[in-house]
Image (tube, rainbow, N blue to C red; front, top):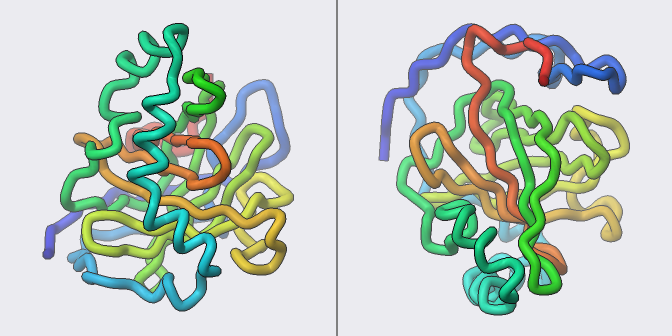
Length: 219
């Protein structure tokens, strides 16, 4: 499965502290991307790295997602409908490849029968390293960061809650108390979601920052 992705030259400054206007940061300073042919491999090696209990969470994600949706009470029903494909388990589309660069992101959590939306933040997707691409959350408090492994029409996320914004140095399997796993899918034109398969359903929505706005401050 191949497709041509045209990518602009992106120069993204490294995040320098938490200011009133957060700036998206590139891992390693400057990200250079050029037109490339991306081939999604049918199966990646993530299963060789993941713990059996976490692999089960990935495999049972559709059933757990259905249970979370079914558990949404009357107060959360309107919010659930309003999120549309973002919270629909079968909304994943083909051709999930993510262009490297900065993304505007937000999180939505399904927990205790409620749908709760968080404040917007910035994420960054790095260039390919072998078959995998990096993912980091750059602003806010909870700071997931790690690697995305392509598998058919999705990516599998293996990472950890990092100690610093824009960091990806703490890998999956180093500290089980900080480990994070999930699934990344494309759900629309220039729209992706990362579902973190933890004790609660936390979903990140990702939309790319326009090439001419890469490095611009957030509102």
